[in-house]
Length: 70
Image (tube, rainbow, N blue to C red):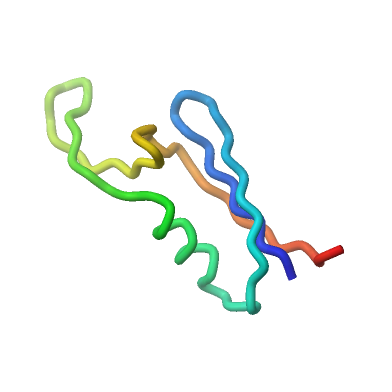
């Protein structure tokens, strides 16, 4: 099985990663946590909030799907 992790960044860029997995249910979350990091930022009102970042770009969402390896 192949695991496809797709990350959509706030600036509109889409990053796609392909991994071969061992059918673990939580493998996608582990891969996402290994690729990204969290830090405190300030929002438009000046309040502190925690954001998730990938290579200094803020992450909007991520999706994961499994495919059969060809």
